[in-house]
Amino acid sequence: MYKILIVEDNADNLAVLEAFLEDEYELVNAEDGKKGLDLALSQKPDLILLDISLPEMDGTEVLAQIRKIDEIKDTPVIALTAHAMLGDKEKFLELGFNAYVSKPIIDDETLLELIETLIKKD
Image (cartoon, one colour):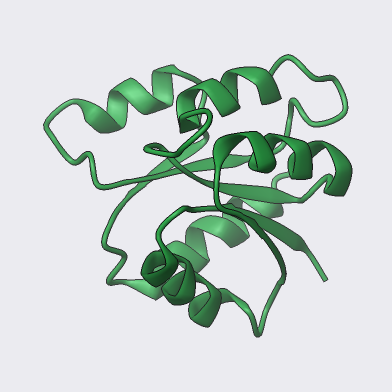
């Protein structure tokens, strides 16, 4: 079973993601960026769902650190964010995220297809 790390500080958003994913994946979660980075290194997930606005370290800082660590630098990372302004998607992709999903997540099928595509790339 593939392992997904969810780094999300909002309990409601985390509950929605867990409901969408728990039947198909092993889930690990962290509520702040520092714990997320630590878990990414210790758990070596197959994919990371990473909120952008996080305590301790924001999602862009976490991603920058992930991309510097050989053991996890190639892990697919999806940006999860309520930042849905024109140009935000492109900005996050340029920073090195593999994909971008705006919150609230309404279409679980699209998210599941995106996850499948990214996990099975390797």
